[in-house]
Length: 260
Image 1 (cartoon, rainbow, N blue to C red):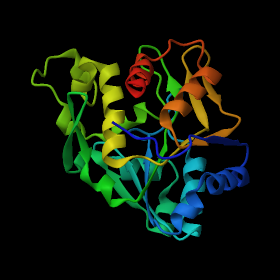
Image 2: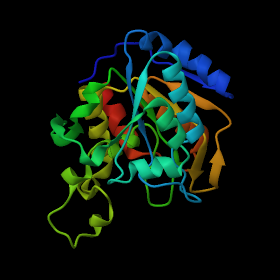
Image 3: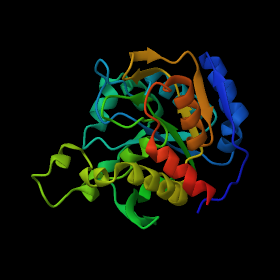
Image 4: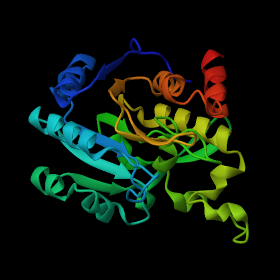
């Protein structure tokens, strides 16, 4: 379904200067010379509270500054049911949003295109195609009774929740923002990833900052990781930090489909 168009790579850094150098090395500066509009998908459906980390704001700020210093402009996207602007301001981004004129896109209110991915129907925001460069900055976590979440699972928050409700309001799955995805969650996570990459492929994935492991609680990455392949970076981060947790079934599904 998805053709390989580049050599997969990821780089690590331990400082803001190192992140900037890696953003250049991986090709973002060169891309910005001709592609000015950048979409940044984050994880901020709710604001941080202890043991529930979100996208690292220092990393997000560094990327915003890098993009604008190199002639680009940004939009920040997340499905937050109308609270994304508030969440960003409460997280300390207000001054940067005003300074750079960052556009804020609450995915839950966007129009969509229907994309069929391995016989599953998914709904991808049309506005994603308005941006020539797309960057994902998730939070990495594995909590009790939840899936390992990093680059690939970030895309569950890329589909509007209004399109994924159930007809039975009494279902226990209604506790989830997008309950229809939880009928077969691992398969749906995999298929949304393929749908996004087919419709509006993301170019770069950045991991770092505060994380959560159900075995040890919160911890900080000592390095920031940036790559151009969500699957390979997810596998690396899992093996480095989450080997004491169950291996994600959706990664096996993706690996099988990529191999066919």
